[in-house]
Amino acid sequence: MIENSRYQKILFLSIGFFLLLVLMAVFHENGILNAYRLEQEQLQIKYENESLRARNEKFRLEINALKSDPYEIEKIAREKLDLIKPGDRVYHIVQKQNSPLLPRQ
Image 1 (cartoon, rainbow, N blue to C red):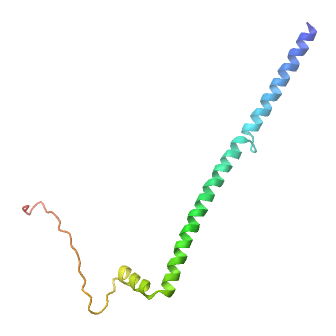
Image 2: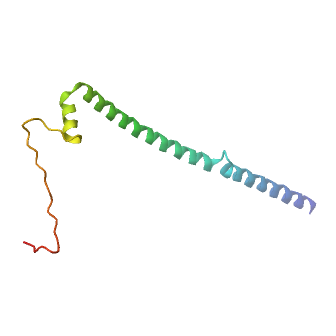
């Protein structure tokens, strides 16, 4: 009877210790959950870095074009600054608004 009781105590202590180890492995600050969260964060940061690299490359190409290509400068001047060359014709398209007071045609 005493041997059985001692065996049960050792068994319960072993199970308790094992459960404590499992809980620490999962929920500790260096545990599995935190490692998974940090890995997801790292993947997100890598994705953002790649996106920023692509954006920087696009800007670098645009800067080089503006430095060396006069047609690119002219294009920007025409589109963003609304500049025109002498002799150019400018057409403004005005959308017609439907008014409830005017009869429909």
